[in-house]
Amino acid sequence: MVLPGATLGVLGGGQLGRMFVLAASAIGYRVFVLDPDPSSPAGEIAHQHLQADYDDGDALDRLASECSVITTEFENVPAGALEQLQDCCRVCPGANAVGIAQSRVREKQYVQSLGISCTPFQPVTSEQDIGQAFENMGPDLILKTARFGYDGRGQAVVRDSRQAAQAWQDLNKVECILEQRIDLQTEISCVLARSSMGVTDFFPVAENVHRNGILFTSTVPAGVDEDIQRAACSHAQSIADALDYCGVLALEFFLDQHGKLFFNEMAPRTHNSGHYTIDACYTSQFEQQVRVVCGLPLGSSRAHSAVTMVNLLGDLWEPCEPSWDQIMQDNRVKLHLYGKKQARPGRKMGHFCVLGAPGEETRPRAEQLYSRLHSAQV
Ligand code: ATP
Ligand code: MG
Image (cartoon, rainbow, N blue to C red; front, top):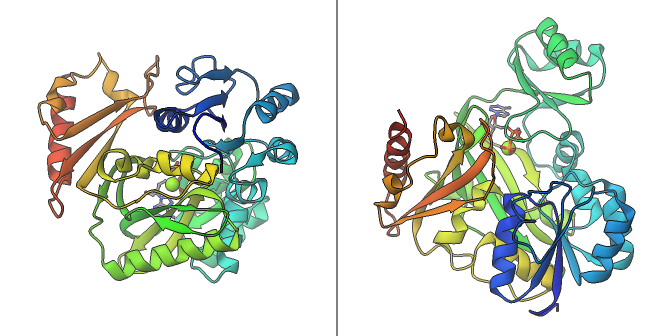
């Protein structure tokens, strides 16, 4: 067990790292953050910000020598860096699981090999692959980069081979997948923590609404059948067990109009759709990450409130900072801002959670509050 007072390392200094630093500091840990960005949201509040690239050997050595355990908030750390760290320090999750989750091709093939249904897809490394994908999967496909995609970036809806070939060219012909577009009923996600002993704990399943490929709201309880939620958690458990996963793992699923569940993707870390846990659960996903990587007993992941989380993107800062009093007039709203200095369209600047009594519907109130924030600008 790594007890409070020890130093923890985090690879990545974004908002997930920042909320990890807040949770770890509250329990008395010191946190070192590795991130090349001089103004990274987590680096700014960490005990130490190592401002260096993820493959900087000296910075990695320093991290490994100063920290009792190292975790990640960013999955695109080079595999070699994790392996170097793993040789001399405890790293959770390990290089193997992170390596699989880094690639849409590897993660989908891995999940399929466990007998779990994924969105139909085909890897794309040549023009022939594109023609074949349309023959096999029909005309309604999405081209996605195999790596480094987030918030819908590196994706294009394509309706025929010519369009897909052009879109692939626009992506500089990097490795991609073509994936069948699902007629979505809704989207859900599971966030779990699994210890090195295999003890697993699930946060309540969240129901997610995306706008323009970016998460807009997450609501708990999810408005989908309990059987479906159980099936998603059971798939998540199988995947975490197969990976012998240690840490917090997030998994996204699509539910189509016929009630069929598809695995979409996973993240070997805390997740935007789990931010609601800070305000609505006995233990947040960030505290759970601290506990699980330190080998402490897991906290209760039960929700004590109904909740809707709403993301705040940089677009809202146009033409000026939103008027926060518009949402804070509701005394069951919790606002979180990530301290990012520059607001850009599509950039995640913060979020707010709207709490309600168990069983209360919170999404309409959340949407109403959000629209007030928006209209306060115009
Ligand atoms: P994030 O960083 O938010 O997880 P991402 O860039 O990794 O996003 P995906 O999760 O693959 O991308 O897609 C983002 C959103 O786009 C999905 O949540 C969904 O709303 C929509 N989408 C993606 N793939 C499909 C699909 N095959 N069928 C229908 N909708 C899709
Ligand atoms: Mg996603």
